[in-house]
Amino acid sequence: MKGELFAVEIRTARFESMLDWYRDVLRLQVGVRQMEEGYALLCSEGFRIALLARDDAIAGQATVSLAIEVDDFDVWREYLNGKSIALVAQENPEGFRELKLNDPDGNRVKLFAWR
Image (tube, rainbow, N blue to C red; front, side, top):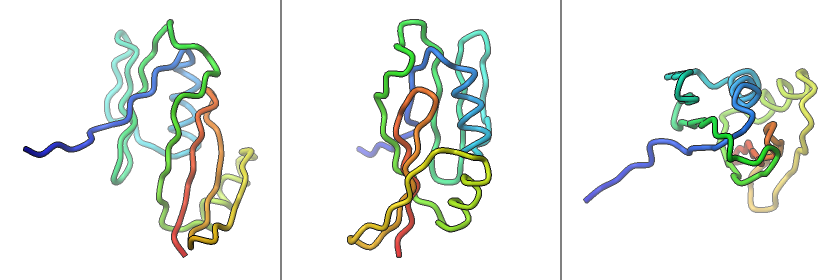
């Protein structure tokens, strides 16, 4: 028996601002959007994130931490700095660099690249 992770689902009370952020900041493509269901599937090469609009989700309650490997650390850092996104850049002694930022709900997003 074999399984494969299809998507990470994030429940949010701020559906539109979260959708805008993942699309405009992380540059994910909207693969599927069902407005009446409050659902969006955001796609990138190698992973998918689903946003679920839920009134019972507590706004600003960070419940997810995402680690996304990127191909060019410096390009991403320059891009995010150009958009005035608050972030922390860090060199890790284990051989990778990472950018730490937060989505509108406060979920931690780490973009990293191996050295």
